[in-house]
Amino acid sequence: MLTMNSAAQPVPASTRAPGRLVALTASLELPGFTMSFDRDEEIFGEGESADFIYRVVSGAVRISRLIDDGRRQISAFYLPGDVFGLEMDEAHSASAEAVTDCEIALVKRVAVERAAAQDPATAGTLWSLTSAQLRFAQDHLVVLGRRSATEKVGRFLLSMAERACSGGAVSLAMSRLDIADYLGLTIETVSRTFTQLERQGAIGLNGARNIVIRNPAAL
Image (cartoon, rainbow, N blue to C red; front, side):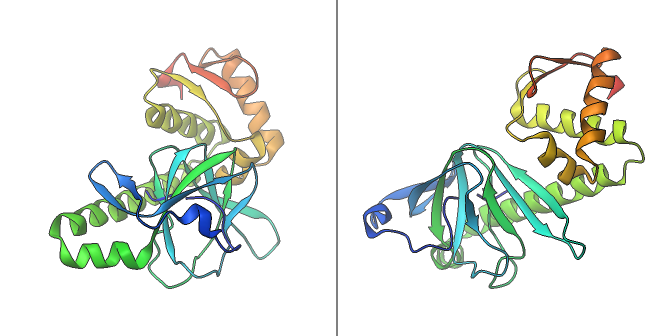
């Protein structure tokens, strides 16, 4: 998936470094720059022009939008190495915010499109990134379709462990409220479910955000 840093404000010329190459993927480098975002700082807003494609260098990013009743729905979390901001239309369909202090790489969308038009390998890379975003969206629908809070939280923790490739140890960047807004639950339900899973021996808790998966089958 695709990812980046700081949004509606004009990018200072000193940070643009026009000739610098930044990596969108291991095989794709294009002229761009990096930016730093503070925790909870907006990277881009819903409805803003989608002029850049982003990659998370460090930290974590959430994608969200407000639904009609004013509640927040988080649709994705992006971690180091993930790409975000690749839109079908000319404007962003949701907002992106830094979950933690972040460093984000930015490449102009027009530069990516031009490279894809000239190089089949780049076009293939963009196809792979788009397919990955679709897969993440499908996975999220599966999580939301789980019937119980335990199933939703369990699947979320397994997914985060898989993405971290850490052998079952997960350090969550996001808060319980973020997780609740991602899973369509209340923060109280998420907290109770974590406690329940710990009591059942499915997970171990070392503080609020450090999780050890002890029994994947139970999740």
